[in-house]
Each structure stands twice: as C-alpha cells, then as structure tokens.
Amino acid sequence: MKQTNVKPADGKLGVLCVGLGAVTTTFITGVLMARKGLSKPVGSMTQYDKIRVGKGAEKQYLHYGEIVPLTSLSDMVFGAWDVYPANAYEAALNAEVLRYRDIKPVKDELEKIVPMPAAFDPAYASRLEGNNVKTCANRWDMMEQIRDDIRRFKAENDCARVVVLWAASTEIYVPVVDEIHGSLAAFEQAMKADDKEHIAPSMCYAYAALMEGAPFIMGAPNTTVDFPAMWQLAEKTKMPIAGKDFKTGQTLVKSGFAPIIGTRCLGLSGWFSTNILGNRDGLVLDEPANFRTKEVSKLSTLESILVPEEQPDLYTDYYHKVRINYYPPRNDNKEGWDNIDIFGWMGYPMQIKINFLCRDSILAAPLCLDLVLLSDLAARADRYGTQRFLSFYLKSPMHDYTADEVPVNHLFQQYVMLKNAIREMGGYEADEEID
Ligand SMILES: NC(=O)c1ccc[n+]([C@@H]2O[C@H](COP(=O)([O-])OP(=O)(O)OC[C@H]3O[C@@H](n4cnc5c(N)ncnc54)[C@H](O)[C@@H]3O)[C@@H](O)[C@H]2O)c1
Image 1 (cartoon, rainbow, N blue to C red):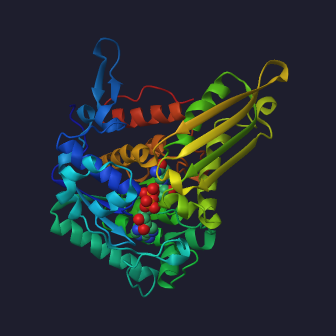
Image 2 (image 1 turned 180 degrees about the vertical axis):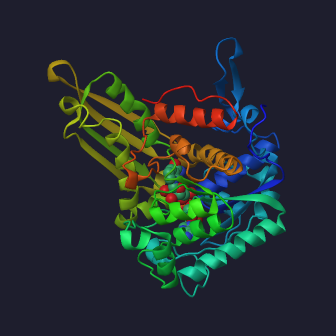
Image 3 (image 1 turned 30 degrees about the horizontal axis):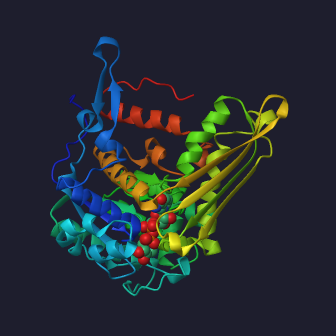
C-alpha cells in the first residue's frame, strides 16, 4: 500500500445500527458468520471487487483493502436501537430471512446485542407498536439521550471509532422547509422548541452521531441528512454523511438497465414498476404517508438518466409509475415487475418485461457493510459532508441541490466515482472522466 494521509484503521470500529430488523440482523449475522469462516460476504465490493490503479506497465488490479486501509471484519463491534426489545438472535429468527443453521453458530454473539431504547415517535411510523422507547422531554433531549448512548457504547466496547447506520423503518415524508432546515441555527432552535412536525426522530440520531464524531448513513429514503442544516453540521464536525435509501432490487435494475435505452438512443414512453413484499418494511410502506417518502426516492432515478431536456424526441412525457404492495405470504422475498414501453426506428413500439425475484435483506446486507467501511474510511481520510462517491449504493443519492448540483443515478457513472475516490484516497490518480 502506498503512503497516504489516510489514518490507519487501528482499534475497534463500533457499528451502531438504528433498527434491529430484517436488514440489520442479516447484515450482522453475515459478518459474524464470515469472520468465523462459515459464510462468504457475497455482494460486498469492499471484500471482493478489484480496482485498476496505475497505467501502462504500472497497471495493477487491487482489492480495496490493498489500496486504502479498511477496517477488518474482525474489528467490528455491533450495537443497535429498536422499538422492539428482542435481541439480535430473536430478531434474526423473527425476520425469517436466514435459515436457522446460518444463525445458530453465532447465537451467543447475537444474543449479546440487545437493542437500546429507540428514539421514536409513533406519528412517524404509526404501524409500529413496540414499547422499547425512550421518554423524551423534547427533540433536543431525544438527541442528547442518543449522544449518551453512543458515548456509553464506545466506552464499554473500547471502540476507537463509531459509525451510525440507519436501517430502521421508513418514516413519513418530511418536506424540507427552508425556515427550519435551511440553517443549523434554525434547526437547533426547532429541536429545542420541540417542533415535532419538522424534526423527525431520525434527525436526532443523525445530529447526535455527527456531534459524537461518527459518520451517519441513511439507508432509508428519509430526508434526514439531506438539507443545508445537516450539511452545515457535517462541515462543522468534519464528519461524512451518506444517503439515501439502499439501492438493492428494482432500482438497481433500473439504474443499470436505463443506460441501455439511453446509450442506444431508443425512446421511452412508459416505465411501470410494481412490487409485492411481505416483511415489516412492506407493512410500514403500505401506509400512504410512509410510501410517499419511498416513492419520491424511487421516482428520481429515471429522470436523471433519461433526461427529457437533453433528448426531447426520445424522453418527453414518459409515464413513470412505482408501486409497492404489502403481501404477507412473501415475507422478505420481494417480487418486482417492470414493464418498459420503448420505441425504436420511426417510432415503432416495443416492450421489455423484467421480473426480479429477489431477497430484500440479502441484497441490502452487503451494502450495509460497504457503506459502513467506506464511511469510516472517508472519516479517516478527512472527507466530510455528503459522500457522493457512495452514490453507487443509493437509490436517491444526496447532492447539493441549492448549488444546482444534479444527482448521478447512472450505475456505471456511479461506479467510476466510487473507483476514483478509492484511487485518490490510496494516493493514485483518478483517471476516468464521468461524462
Ligand atoms: N432491504 C432492502 O432492500 C432495502 C432497500 C432500501 C431501503 N431499505 C430500508 O431499510 C430499512 C430497514 O428495512 P428492514 O427490512 O430491515 O425493515 P424492518 O421493518 O425489518 O426493520 C426496521 C426496524 O426498525 C425499527 N425502528 C423503526 N423506527 C425506529 C426508530 N426510530 N428507532 C429505532 N428503531 C426503529 C423497527 O421496530 C424495526 O424493527 C427500511 O426503512 C427500508 O425501507 C431496505
């Protein structure tokens, strides 16, 4: 490895997960099994992918961990918060994602992960009824209690660093209001004034994490760290933030498939995406206010890849619809259907159908691992604010919309951004353009 300015990954990395549901338990169980040599972290780029560094005769293909100092799986320590009191072993069984034989060998370790009481407000996810919840005087107090939790966890587990990952239920849609979310001072004032309408519990977790020197990752579509007040806090605390919404099933396919249509200059008249899903995430998303948050996130993908203003003949007024339907028999095994109406030479119509029978948490777990390790890396590389190089993993990548920045949704452009950031942090030249 070249000599770089990135601080080494010495000591333990605390991974504090908000939500101990299907995604989190699948993620944690997989890491614990992998480090015992009983399973493979398939799908994780930090564990498998190789990047070219150097050119010509100097060219080499190296794993991420050979280019930059990454925390090893054996140095990760897990903790969580959840509305339900079940420990990680019970929660993994309840989630019914993994077979018993893939959980049992790490039962003892999982049982020790007992969720801390959640910072929760039922108005933000009305279908949840757990009682492992903090009593808070106001939003500021809620945030202070989370800070205490982080500090205690870090001390008790002798962690050198902590990352906070939101893999909890999607909250109701919170529109960004300039008077509240536009500046850190106004935002802090609203927390103290207990403005429940504009300050979601997730924002208290994010604020607390950044104040405690922990990067914050938003895995759900919540707007939590996607506004100027949080960007200012990330800058003030010199901490990385990443979000939002893990790009796992249908949107992964969409952001990989839409470029086929775009690069071949075929036309698009409609793209209809629907899903059936039966886990607790599906239950929460069956609530229209919670689905609205997801819909905004899912819809944004296509418009930035197939841009009407750039190709009015091909992409003006295409009809884009996304649906999620709660259907209990399928549990975590989501089925997605995409019907794509395209047109070709002289406007002749054609159709493409994609039927993806996926496992939601199996796809999300490696993203959790990569986002955690790469956010920790970013912090050690003194990168702060929105980490756009992590857009690859996210359905609705954050960007500075106040500065007219546009999100990059094109899967292959996102991959270039990821590789270049790793190259740069590893002391190599970023050498591919993303146009
Ligand atoms: N699996 C995927 O492919 C995927 C993709 C993109 C985004 N996501 C998002 O990831 C999140 C987790 O998904 P999941 O399938 O694990 O859901 P899940 O319902 O199994 O788990 C979420 C857990 O979060 C807990 N929770 C809710 N609010 C909380 C709070 N304020 N504090 C602490 N805990 C809280 C719930 O009690 C629940 O146990 C969801 O928001 C989902 O939309 C998942």
